[in-house]
Picture 1 (cartoon, rainbow, N blue to C red):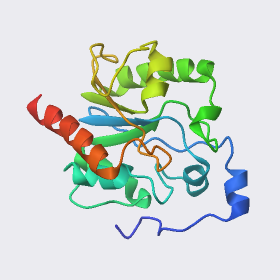
Picture 2: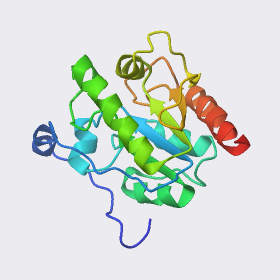
Picture 3: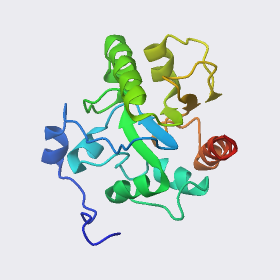
Picture 4: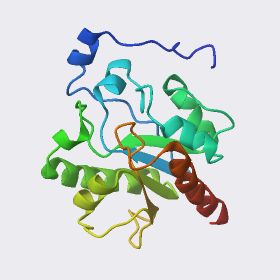
Length: 189
């Protein structure tokens, strides 16, 4: 961890409750290789102010296992992603205790906002972390994990499972394989 980064800490119950509806700052820069797109911040992430913050979220270990980062980063080191030409944003900015609390209208509007963001920042790939949210936001009811036939802006759209510990369908090993497929596609392009 760099000296100017915040040390890891855990929120109190009161801080978690107060995080409902909060937002987290994007980790963005122009022309990234991959912009990872979460569904929306969970309360834990919003309380600490960092993406994929809850212990047990498999985003950071999957990112490392796939070769995107040289070690497992903590959410408090998320700014280091920019050095690896990676970024993070969310489909819907408001925090909630569960992603299934979001409405279809919020996801559809989030897809529109994301498209504008992608056109502005021009990442090469957009990796969406949530199959159902992508299907709703972009009207792609049959979308499956992997490269999508339709780009977002000029970026290749790539669908990945939600890395939340609540998503029991995919274990870390499964996520690492899918993240590796994305990394290899980025390297080939």
